[in-house]
Amino acid sequence: MPQVVRSSNFAAGVVAVVAGVALVGCGDSKPSADHSSPADSGKAGGATASVPAYTGSPLPGLDAKPVAAVPAHTGGSGEDDTPYAVGTSFVFVKATDPKSTGDQQRPATVVFYQASTGRQLARVEVPLWDEQQPQVGDFNGQPAIYFHETTTGASDGLNPPQTTDHELGFVASGKKVVDESWPDAQSRKPVDGWPVNATTSKVSIYAPDGTLRLSVDVGDVNAYPQLPTIVDNVALVSEAEPGSSEPQSRLAAYDLTNPRSTLWTSDTVKPAGATSPNPSVRFTTAGRLVLVWSAGSDPDKAIVSVNDLHTGKALGVTASLTVSHDFWSSSGSARGADNAQANTAVLPILPADSDLGCIALSEADAQIRWQQTATQEGFTPILVVGDAVYGSTRLNSVNAYVNGDNSLPLPTLALSLTTGTVAQNGFDTAVPFLVTDDGYALVYPADSNANHYWIFKSNT
Image (cartoon, rainbow, N blue to C red):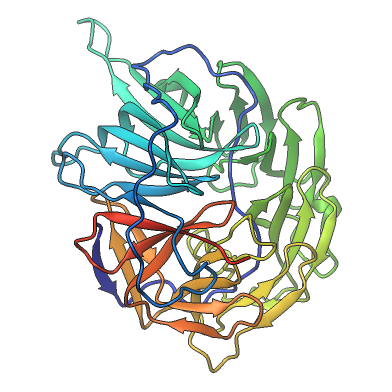
């Protein structure tokens, strides 16, 4: 089981916006032929594990009893599996070779479990991967997980060694959908199935077969290269607003299946009261975007809107909200939590040192459902399942360290998703920490000697 340690500086004080699952990145081209050692897909139909009895107290947002259990075993390197929620599956990644000092790439075994039954769907071997963080995104609208690796060949004695980037992608069933390679000299970064070359003046997006799909001159408005957000075959690119007297950036949406012109631009859908044409993309869910805009000359003011991904049409807009002055920095706000099953979920818009806590919004129309008061301890949302939002406060937080350098936060507090009142304070026997799109939670037993995780279904 993962090692549990307490942390006193876990992010707190955020604004919770109730939204859906954020799947950043997709692809619409067929996977290329194998250029590196292939990942071997396992066979579906594995037996489900017996379900250990759960005798603890009811967990907010979940049914009373678990529906399944999956093994939580230690890999051959002496490290635990790292779990991820991918669509309707839980995916466990296990490094299969011991880690040497400074080594960030190792072979891995990846096991896919159906969340609703605990049945093993597939087992694949990834020959080499950068263990810092697999990307969870989508492929042609299907949730997917991606693994990146960089390999360097031997020199021929005259020329320097050639370095090659590889990316493998699997959908929730364990089926491989992306197997692509490109020379490292091309400076392409993987964005969930799409190799992207981004500079301060140009963004180029390539299909998995290497063909150029979109090239945009973004102007000289970005101080550093910005990778696009890619979801459901739509690329959201930060580019210069044409015709402005001073350089300003805007968000432009491009259809990667037919990228001849923009679908929409943020300067044409900017809500009343917003002062910048370039919003921050916080979540994408079910064909919708949750965007945050600066509001007025005061840097501590912001507006949140819910927009249609393909048309840019605003489905709802909040009034001006108070945010921390450093909210607009790239590292100034925690990412937050959300879930596609609920029509409400969680987005933070305040950094960890804020005292303002959370607000909850409907992703359908951006209406505020509840808001923390200034006297309450700031709450950090971690996950949403059923009618509950789980998280922690800055004074009481727990991290579960899994697979060496990676860590997953464990909630210490649950609030009602509809009212914001406390549903449970502290979890002595078990706590959920991951949730799938169809509302199944992976639950961490408090017993550090347990060799399983429970799976509970949401109560809505």
